Image (cartoon, rainbow, N blue to C red; front, side):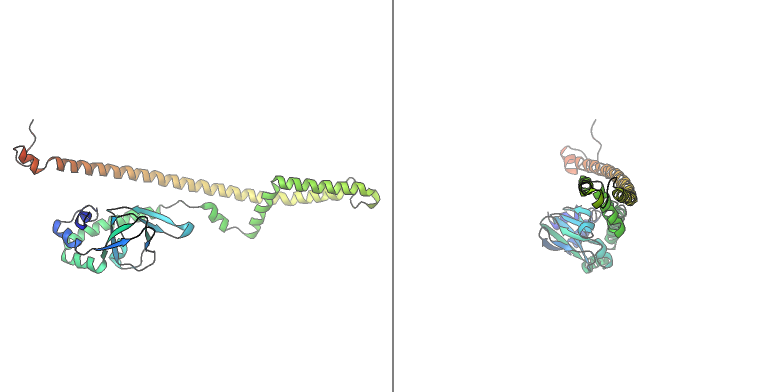
Length: 291
């Protein structure tokens, strides 16, 4: 696919006339990028729009666990248009997921083109405005996140201790250790006799220790249970937002599908009514079909 065909097949430039397409193609510079290469990062200075001729590119924000993929782009797509307009730093990162052949349009060349073709500039800017609006809507609706990890980062030292106590107190390990300790306590006092035993039968000191342990352990476990209830509430709220976003996304997909079918129908009508076929049939171009 040559540069002119690439430009004509892109929604950003589909309204340009043939002379405008040729003028714009002359401003492009070809760049080859390997798979896994970072094309640019968020915050870096940028002044170039990229057209994807071959390969695939991923647009994302954030790093590590906070990384959010905004879009996956394929041949016929473009990216980097925001910095092309204002010359400021990049608002997102772009990386090649496949070996890519890109056509780069630098800011100086772009403004030189629009100064010579003001009508084309109006068309391009209208398409860019629509693209920016869609990107902003996608970013503002990004609700998928790890709410449990966020809650974990806000825990105090006391809350962490409460979780450990609740986890250990509700395990078979605690039951086994506590049972062995009680058995050893009672056995030792029985064999030592009433005169030498430090806690003779009926083991009043042991009962006091058990009561104190239960009195302290109960509120600690309740603290942990209350936090677990708060986590469940956060998960439920996040699930609702994710489901709502998915529903809106499906509606948008159906809308785009309808627009695509309408465009395909229009193209089909154009291709089935070509001048060459009309001439071969002995009819004037644009004449109605014979009954």
